[in-house]
Image (cartoon, rainbow, N blue to C red; front, side, top):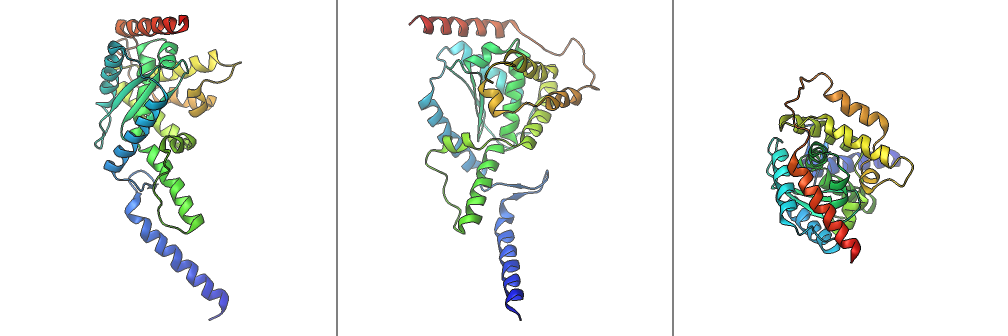
Length: 270
């Protein structure tokens, strides 16, 4: 056997070995997805990242706002095909426009995002999109991909997550496929929970229109929104039966907005 053939055989055996090592971590239900984390590990990772996030940003302390968001989020999550996530929804006391989905079901929206939304449907659309990221396990898939690349390049073992887990999650942006998958699910979640699915598209339209000539808000920076993606969102529900019975807004949403707006005004005076 020649040296070249021997090297080829060794490489092939190595590839087969890697494939067998990865089989327990592959999900073939919708394409091929690699995830090194069990559901319990995912919850633990999310909890650790949530603690880091809350040590950096204050939560909105007003219980009406917190209770409202938890109720709205739970309503959307109740229609999702939930494999066992326990969702928690919180408002971060920040003027930035952003939404964050952490592994395991920890979802945050900023005060700035709630104030930017025109109605309850748009806020529900954002929550639906973040819920979809959690249900699809995009966070731990991104971490698993990063660890796999590290494994291949270093030929080492599957190292533990980096100490600053939140920083690690923040730098791993979602792929275009992840975003499209979350859009698809979010539109369905809105419809199934009684909200007009157009709300997700109108929120995207609003952000792009307001910030067209200015620096993009964080939500758009971390959730890229090319025009064709917004057109695609509208196309998803274009043939669905829709009428005035689908929810677009509520009085409670505007009460919460007024509460947060007053809090922001008080903070500026201090």
